[in-house]
Image 1 (tube, rainbow, N blue to C red):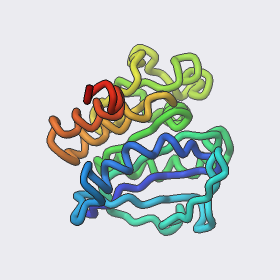
Image 2: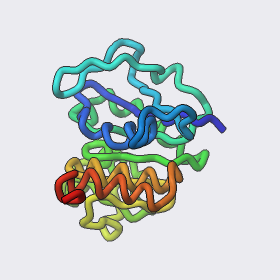
Image 3: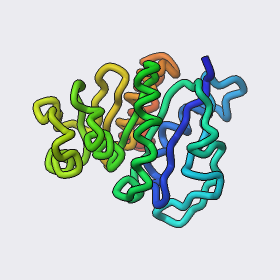
Image 4: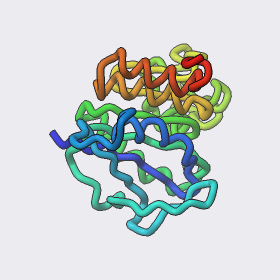
Length: 201
């Protein structure tokens, strides 16, 4: 099994939503990991640089046409691109990932995209509020009772989160992926949640 974690970035992606997860994958409190368990890779519609909401441009490792068949997890990073027709090209990628039993994470508008395509109908989940999930999901979203008013939710191999839950999203995925011990993942979470001054008085 490949150890690559694939992050799908659409134009005008929310750069802050990738930070805590990707950092914990690649580094620890000492430095960049010499032998990380997983490797971060960026997937975009084409191999051209993809622009974040803030204007930063990221050079993809793969396009939708060249992404590998085997990988460790698929992560959908939120942003405005999920409200465009371009996002519909991701449906088959997500469907393939779920059919292979791969962990799939979706944050912010990407969670609403998951509702739109019926991917949340058999799991507990969250997102940018139940009303947005219903609006985006329409007839394809049939699991309003599965909605949980929480920052991030894991059920089976699917992790969902709202747009303010970058850190909780990372924590849930790090646990699901067993990136480190639960104790060290909790320590990473608390350090970033509470801050240096609160923890080291």
